[in-house]
Every structure is written in structure tokens, then in C-alpha cells.
Image (cartoon, rainbow, N blue to C red):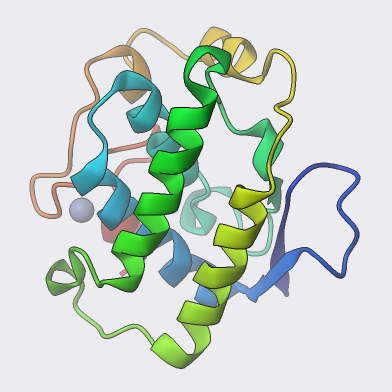
Length: 170
Ligand SMILES: [Zn+2]
């Protein structure tokens, strides 16, 4: 079983990033750690919370495929936020926050996936119309994106509706 990340629905399978379920957990963990440390603006925090929702412990293993264009991009700050996400990937490669993990990610497997993710992000020029608005409309007032972006007391990570991605996937 695996999860596949593409750029948009027209992405061909050759350019998509495919990872095993276990590697996907690690991939999301390191991005959430880095992103939580680097995110400053609301639109940046939203992107990390959205990634943290790709939580296989809550939604099922092998069910977190996504296309980059369906992330809750804010069209007003798209260029800046895309640059932010590239910095998040770079931070993950610099092992930002890894001291909070109770294991050591396998860099030989993880880093090529992070590089691949960067390539997908760099080539992203289109966002799905209404993705941000729909995501927010589905949120309850008590959800993290609506209630001041609470963090895990143990990992300082931004929480999703499922809680802390790292606590959930220990
Ligand atoms: Zn945690």
C-alpha cells in the first residue's frame, strides 16, 4: 500500500511522488515539525495544518493521496506561500525539530522524497478554485484553523482536527 502525491489531476504517474505508508508518516512528521517552526502567517499555518490532516492513524493507511493544487492556498499570497513551503522542505532536510522525534528517520529513503516534493512545489502554478474557501467552510469554530492554531505541548507542532500528527503516529 502506498500514498501518491501529485501536482494536479493532470499529473502523470511518472512525475508523481509515491511513498509507502510508513514512509508517508515520517514524511508528514518532518514537514509538520519544520513547518510548525517556520510558519508565521495564517496562510502558512493553514498549509501545515492541512498537511497534518494527512494522518493515516485517523483516516486509514494508504488513503492520504493528494494533489498539491488542492491545498488551501490563498490566491493573494500564493507566491510567498509556495516559497514558504519550499523552505519547509529545506528545513526538513536540515532536520529541523528532529530532536523531538523518538526515532531517527531513514534519510536515504526520505530525502529523495523531499527533493521530489520540492520539484512538484516548484512547478505548481495553478491552484484549485475554491479549495481554501471550501476547507474553511467545512471547519467548525473549535477546529484548529478557526481557534488560533493550538500546538502540541510535547512537540510544539500545529494541531489538526485529529490532534498532533507525531503523537498519533508514534
Ligand atoms: Zn505531539
